[in-house]
Image (tube, rainbow, N blue to C red; front, side, top):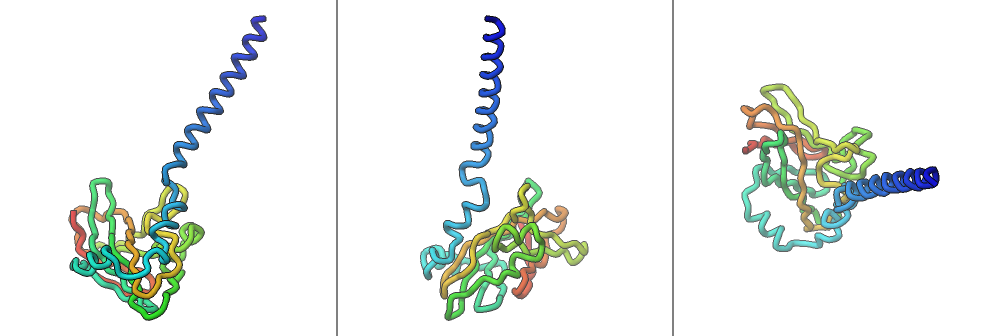
Length: 193
């Protein structure tokens, strides 16, 4: 009888361990924490059919920089802020100023295999410290996904897409950086924070 009780207890302990592991896995994967679910919503160019309140706000706000790309694409950088965690986050809007729907160039994702395999993104962006002679690349999460807007392939004429890119922060005294994105002109940025 005690052997039967011990066997049942072991099976119960194994079941409890498996259930706890599954619960932890579901908790870690849920809540939109994965990068694959996020971009399919607002990042889709089809949801930004033209000028709306967010576009008007972005146009009335003086951008830090404007970069022109191919096919009428315009990137307006609205902020570049250093945070306490050791990152610089660059925010802005990507607008199609052209007369036709623009296909987002794959070159914007950069050429790193780990970033490319996660789909279209702004993973090719870099911040350059010309004085310190250092280049800072878009950060990646533990699964290799770039910490930037992802999942967009086209942008309709007149449509605007809110974008972000996160980089490692340069040393505290460095505030003047050059922003570069493949197929776009480069621009100087002043980092705040």
